[in-house]
Image (cartoon, rainbow over all chains, first blue to last red; front, side):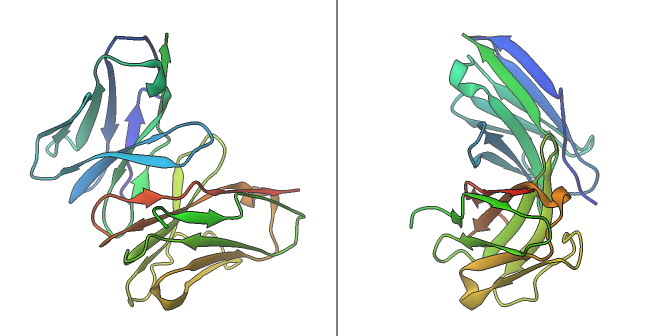
Length: 108
Length: 113
């Protein structure tokens, strides 16, 4: 089955630093998405990158995709305390599969 | 409404009872998904509805779980004879066509005691 697996599992940084999270998956995809989940709230869709794209930007977010390595990375630049959340990648099909996520803590 | 609405937001039930969880997707979204997230674990796919096609039920963990989607809109997830391991947050998501960005509801937190 397709599955996104994120690493690291937990990341703690100082405000203003950049945070990088990685995701690996197992099978071919049409697109890959990154989501954020704040504690006690629903998932928020951050960005989608299609399999024919290598890099995509959205505000302070930068996503890369390497289909040959079946991996993606999410970079959050100039982090803020409000970025503290769990971040999930999800791969497509007629189902989306999520990993357990990377728990990011941004220390003010 | 503007988003995906789930109800109830919290449900505590006794082991062995049946529960129904409701999801109101965004109007016009043809794809609807149910997931659950157990404590400390990733999201687990349960079931997928796409338009008038037969639903993909491959993620349902047992025959105690069932879901329906009436009129291509509202969906109900039913868990019969609940067990403690059913305790989780149940999330619903809808998508315009099932291929692109999803909008998630805030979930139903189910606690089986």
